Every structure is written in structure tokens, then in C-alpha cells.
Image (tube, rainbow over all chains, first blue to last red; front, side):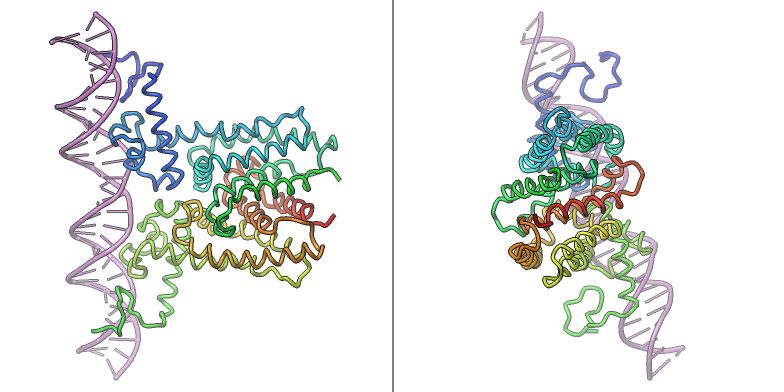
Length: 213
Length: 213
DNA sequence: CGTACCTTTGACCATATGGTCAAAAGACGC
DNA sequence: GCGTCTTTTGACCATATGGTCAAAGGTACG
């Protein structure tokens, strides 16, 4: 039967995926997140992802055409979640509080979504082969917008003078450090939960940096 | 010929390596640093490392018994270099200046030795399978010592109150971010060199954080 | 030269891995 | 119960890759 006008391979190109298909794809992505974030792209194997998802390898490949396809869907799906907190920074809010809220939110994400954080770290470390374009367009324009907003706050004397873009980098690096370098942090800190201390420290750090003189 | 009393495999177990052997091993490590830092452990192949070093694969394996051996020697060889700047922090120096010097030194290393930085980042991201022990012993005791020193400075009123260990984490993350996340930084910043801006920003950040009230 | 050692390599091997395929097994509407 | 479509799988393939080996090519030194 000619399937619509689709250049299909496996899954029929009917617009709507069935519930079941969506669910299975979700299961696969979940398993893939586990494996990719722990082993990196090259280190991850389809067999392991399939096993983790409770499928056979050919069955996985029925839902996604290739290992790369899984990885890329995972990555692009996570990107928006990842940038959400920055996008949520409100130009009309109270400046210092907006920034502190962003810091807190970002640290919570590091704590609650370490796999996502590591997946990105991995991709960027490798030179971002899959998302360089997005970084240069979507990410850049988001940062441009928000750093402009920060600059306005500075000009209005609401927060102390800082380089707005490097401030954003600082927030990223200081928060993600606690997920990406988790083993190192824990090795140094012993077995206590690092996050309460981290939260308190970042609170101090950014308040001292940003509170107007 | 019975070779000494050695459980050798390839290279004879005579204590001193010849000049030539040292040189070749160095060449191999240099090539390995290139490849491992760019592709990660699993992504790197012996063929590529050998090619980069100008050797055949069996020849490389004559100098090192396995891929893992190359990686581990590389890693442990770099560790001390990597921790040097922290070790160099002088308890009897001028506190704020000692810390700022450490920050500057670390940022220079991020700029000048990005491969080393990425190699470590990679290893830690994977859960530090090869150096967890070292982190929990050598690294931990170095950090314990230096954070004690920082605490003394705080008690003496020389710098503002901060969590000493998280301060050290902050220095690591803020500086290494510029090498490990280089593509991202450059994607956002455009094509200018990020380092001058980074240096200025970190100067401001740590001075505001640490200057006593 | 000769000999004893060091170095290098082409050929080869076993395994891992991404991916294919045809056929079996379900689902579902009738 | 039947026919059609979707889903699943066992068997299989090509390639990549870490690693071995025996033999050839140096090298140093008497």
C-alpha cells in the first residue's frame, strides 16, 4: 500500500503518532538519556540503550532510524527545557531578585537533572557537533536579549556594574559545576550533600557581586 | 634470554629508559592528549593516536601495553601540573593577593592548556573511573589544607567571610568554564577572544566577594 | 663482520557494534 | 475467524577496533 506521499523508512509517516508510539519513544529517550549522559555519545551502545529501555536493538531501530537520531532528538528536546529558566528572567521584575531566582533555579536543575546537565556538558566539550548552529542562533539571541536587560538594570543603578554576558557565564558555570563535577565535589566534601552549602555560597557570592555599592 | 627477574611484556624492565624511549613515549603522550581530549576515552582510537604520533599501531603498543595504560599515564602525569597552582598558594602571603593570583593563574591555564582541562573534565564527567582514589586522597587533603589556610585568613579578618571549600570550587568552575565550554562561550560572544573580558570579570567578581566589608 | 639486543611492521585475530532483513507475532476493524 | 497493518525478533552483515605475533630491520659493540 503506498503510504501517503511519504519517503518513509520504517514508521509510517502518518502525521499523528499513536499514544503507544509516543510512549515507547519516550521510554527510549529516557533510557538513552541515562546511557548517553553516563558514557557519552561514543561510549553509549545501542544494545545498552535498548536493554535499558526493555527492547531489542532492532526494535529500538524501528522507532528511531539510527543512534544519531536518538541522540539528536534527545538533545534538541532538552535544549528548550534547559534554557527556560533564563528565558523566564523578567525585565520588569525586581532586578537583584530576578537574578537570584535564576541562580537558585539553575542550581536546582543541576541537583534534580544531573543527567541532562552532563549530556550538554559532554556535547559542548566535544565541540558541540550537533548543536553549534543552535548555540549561535537561538542561544546567542537569548543571551543578547537577557544581557541587554541586565545592562538596563545596571544603567538604572539597580545592580552593581558587571559584564552582563560574563555574569551569565558565571551563573552557568557555578551551578552546573555541582552536577558535572559531582564526583570531584563529593570526593572533596566527604559524603554530605553538597547542595545546601552550594546554595548558601552562591547566595553570598552573587549578592556581593551585584548589590549596588 | 631471561630478562632480569621481570614480569615483562614488551619493553625490558631495565630501570632507566633510554633517551629515545623517553622521547617516543613523550611523542605518544602528546598525540594521545590531542586525541583523548578531543574525543574522550571511548571516542579515541589507537589508530588515530598512532597516526598522530607518526607510528604504526603495533609500534605504539610496543611502548605502552594498552590504550588504558596510555590514558592513565597521561592523566596521572597531568594531575600534579593541574594542582600545582593551588599548592602554590602561600599561607604567609598577602591573602587577597594570593587568592587573586591563583585565580589568574588558573584562568591562564584554561587559556593555554585547554586540552588538559578538557581531558580532566571528561574524566570527571564519566565519574572519574581512573582517578577517584586520587581525588579522595591527594586532592582532598590539598583542599583541606588550603581551605584551612583560607579559614585562617577569614578569622584574621584579612578577607570577607566565605565558605572556603566552595570558594575553591568557584575558582575551578569559573576558570575552567572558559576552556571546557569554549565553543559555547564563543558562540555567544562572537569571534572576539573571550579571555580579556573573562579576566576582568573574574577580577571584579572575586574582589567583591572577598574584600572585607 | 658477528652477535645480541632493540625497534618496527604487515598480517592476523576476536570481539564489539551500528545497522539490515525477512519472517513471525500481535492488534484491530469487520 | 479473516485480512491488513503494526510491532517484534532472531539471524545476519560489514566495519571498526583493541590487541597479538612472528619475522624483518636496525643498532651497538666486541
